[in-house]
View 1 (cartoon, rainbow, N blue to C red):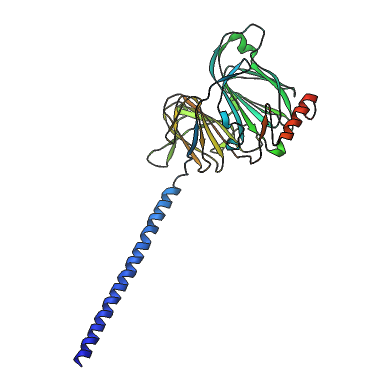
View 2 (tube, rainbow, N blue to C red):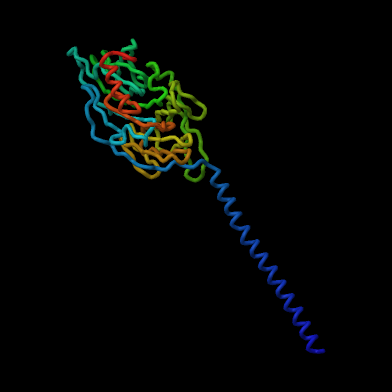
Length: 352
């Protein structure tokens, strides 16, 4: 019948319309699903073009200075964060900013007399002037500008630190720093040792200039600045210091303004300390004796020198996830071990 033919025709039209609509929906769904994937792939490509930047966790501003003995007026850089797990493996950091000393012919040396240590290492860097060292293991040495002494107290050592005889007689500008580095539990009672590291034996690596437009970097001429690798490794160049855990200690000199980038091992605690000049780290402005504590995430650090003749110390290290017990010149894992250290020192036993 006509109604049947009309119904059949209508049915075919409806089926055709539904088919077209279904195909359009499928096509649209496919289109929608592929576009985010393309963007994600592009984003992933962009992300993998360069390493993830370290972000700033906290800025510690320069604390008030105090005297250590009568030869070292220092900023206790770590302040109330000294001897905390947050900065591990680094324990304490004293910086003696440039200070002028008159010639001293009194016969009384300026510095700190004999005192003990156990359970960690002291790292002293001379920038200007000279530091004279002697210890109970028979080591006697003088370090001058650019030199480093890396002393492992281990099970025990007694030492003294003074302005050198030569510097005392002549007088002049004195600048140095001392860093305390923790030892893991199984190395705290290791035999004491002394590493004299001369400036001429510390390799220099050119700086990498960071580009603001892309992740590409270029090697800057050596006259623009360099990094002295005291310990650890940077771009396949290794420092001379022997360490018990992974520690990077880099002395960075930036003669010209600009942004420079440094590769950092994943998971390291990282600190950037301003020794001279002025820098920006992730937008944060840092001046003399300020320190930036960085978050562990990321593997790249960018430092922008905003003044010429700027210098920064970069400290990065694998955290030692053990208890820290510190009292005076001893750093152990428990209070009982600290008491034993004092007893051993008093009676001259077990390393003393």
